[in-house]
Length: 551
Image (cartoon, rainbow, N blue to C red):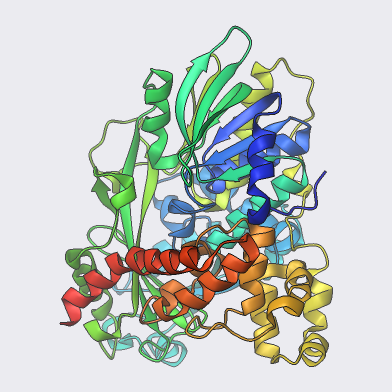
């Protein structure tokens, strides 16, 4: 077992390990589903490797609404099993598995019909509360039962809303999570259990032998190709599932992509301390406070382009502003929007419908051939169940002999010892010359692993990176040496969210971050300049969309 370190500076050793012998399972895809499967399989005793063409969580898993929820709207679709399962997972993550990454978030659901709506939705929320209290560990007690708000009560609770156009509201609790850091914590925990995790490796070939598969992978940084041998392959590639199926030569599972766009506005422009959930003609609309910002989203529209090119456009941004402004006492101006991001939801299409908003989020494990499986669908909250179901099939194919999943009892990196450190946060702040707010932010990002971050301060100090919000210089070094960061975007968009939460996309921070990463990776000043420029180009796509609106 390793310590859970994914060291970007030792990537060469990781690539060499991939060519060493035959793995029981090779996973293609490093989002929340793939990393979850790596953890599940490695903790059962399988020899596991995972390859990811980009960064861990670089696709859908870092572009969500950052919620852990059962899905109130799924009750209306009578998907009770999906809701019950998700609420159980919410409880596990908030309690035993990742308490440092999960927070309780009150939601307000405005009512717009005088009589029937309060009783109808209230009955649904009573069912939601009941499902949430099913045995799932003590964590579910953190989430309170729903309550009714009159119009006056809503005005007091949410003065930013136009309470006068409602008949009051219902308030209930759900969970909030840092999606990118959850994916990273799962990946690091898988590495601790023995999985080999390698990023910037794209699967480009698939060759069957009688007793194994040889998968050709291309290093996206050097162009060098190598071979990974495995007894079974699991494609956990989300909207890229078709690419893996084409390598195998069989297309069995159809995965539809739905584009979801979120706007980022500062709290100074939209002062809310609760989330809002309501409905548009196209999707569910969320207003979600996150740190010093508020997310407004999301859209739900079919997407058929290259997943690598997904981005928000002017229509997406205009639509969201129009929808949210119906509810706000002070409408948001286009200039209020400091960030925007777009992601793709992978939906397993079993019904042949053209409407992605109507496709179920339930997951599917499909047989591509005798050596390759694919998993698609599902949602962030139930990643652990998806991983368990996929690995159950892998184990069956391998002939059994492995124990059942234990990930419901396996705390993620940063969970053990978190509460004790949280209780000592004032002392930690004094010891390291930090504010208590800074220590709280560090603990919410790293949990008990904050001790590794503080240890890195001897090299780079605990000063913040200029122009990157609260990101510390020591966190950049830690991101390379413990969290596998290889590019500036890995740090500013996923190890932190500074690139989404600052008006310039943290472009001014790119040079300093690149220099710190170069020191940790052993790169020269040419790499530093090129990487900083590349980051500014990456973030320029969304800045262009905003500039078109503000101009």
